[in-house]
Image 1: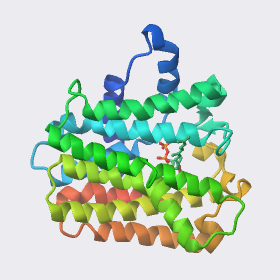
Image 2: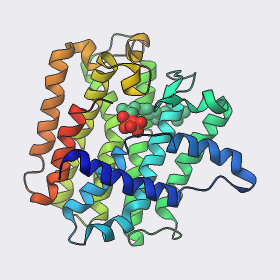
Image 3: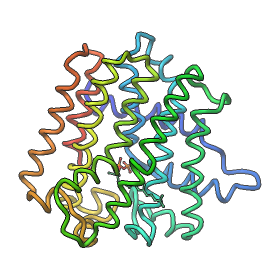
Length: 300
Ligand code: GRG
């Protein structure tokens, strides 16, 4: 299957699950729930849930629909946490952006306090999705491992810590090592967690989990290098978010360190490393291989 068709099909599965598992905007909290739903359903590539399911398919012997049934709430949890991070990242106190996923950002649409709470709601609901027996999921011990992996990746030594380093490094000349730490934690940690959660949920053995972790780290880096590149080279229309914002905010990026051409080759190198980490897998890893190549060739 072509990667474009594969992505379309997987996105549909994720979209349907998000509709199924996300709280409806009704009752006493309807207005608050609507702010969460707005940012979640306004668009998005759904890359993290897709990585999660693809990693599970790569190691599990069960038919794909059965694997999906069990892991979709966890995959949706990843998208909830990612969406929360975008809402908070766009706030005036952070990157102060008006546009996200081609539409007004959550605080532009609903107000700042409402947007902060939309993020908080999505972050917290993510853990309900994985832990509550209301939702399908693997055995309790496996759920616990998924929760630990996700919490660690999203928390102070992962995405939130990376955001802190990013925000406090603006307008500063930082060493390349620090830029790598920022990319690894701010963006890479959640993508690596998505792959690891799929692997764990799909029943990976220790060797498979190790290989998929290497893949996740490399693909996470490739993703953020490409994000840096697109910010510097694509248009606001193509991105659905303000282009060139890294430069305006005085952020350290790969293009700022290496220029556009070298950055492009570093992104490809990271994608190659991701593919190389999958050497021990058979054709069931083909979607993961194609995803690694896709994320460095994407246009948004
Ligand atoms: C806790 C107050 C508070 C704030 C935290 C954690 C955080 C704010 C921000 C996370 C950092 C962040 C937004 C990193 C950027 C990662 C990235 C490359 C986002 C774009 O992801 P895509 O391209 O977006 O997958 P779509 O819209 O397709 O889902």
